[in-house]
Image 1 (cartoon, rainbow, N blue to C red):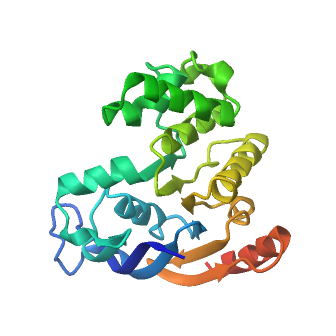
Image 2 (cartoon, rainbow, N blue to C red; image 1 turned 30 degrees about the vertical axis):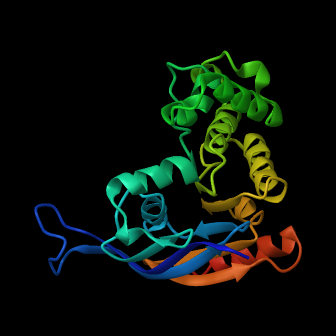
Image 3 (cartoon, helix red, strand yellow; image 1 turned 60 degrees about the horizontal axis):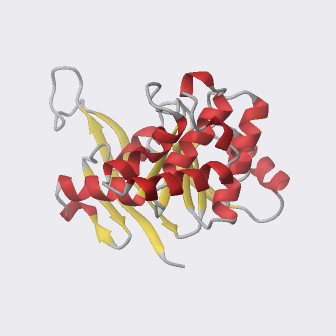
Length: 252
């Protein structure tokens, strides 16, 4: 399989208030993380709060910059790219799904979904066709003229998923996509992510604290204190993988 993402010895420091990043007392959040992700994989990232999960995802999505180490995206060492080139990769090749949805209440559902391609100056009619196809696929076509504040949490997350997919990205980064949902809505969203991976063939890298959600993944990377504690692949049923994940979580 083609390697879409390779992370080599990723380090991230944050300076203490009033300090510098090179100070001895700078806070080391990521301490040399390395792993790779192949095309078509569904990878979960788990760990206690403060272990560096979200920081890692922000770096991989080019919303933050590592202190040291390499991120190789689709065969390109991103350390060698200009900021504008990183922005272009983020806009064209990465889809984002966040815990708090990040939808604009002033726009309709359809307008929110179309936003990435409108910003990319795609023809309006093509934008609408792509948005409508995704709305139908995820069962939200009846909601297209509503505003996000009129929707349930599960409906808003499905809108966010459609927005993440409209550019046909190479990979989707999801940060706690079921974190703000009740168990029923969370299951619906978990089903959608599994469908995106298995039926649409999309690569997914997802931060989650939920072992049930993680058991849908094909592989889970466990972080502890800024390092990779373990990297476990699914071998067997979802229920067996769930029990494996619970066992790994006890090591946090």
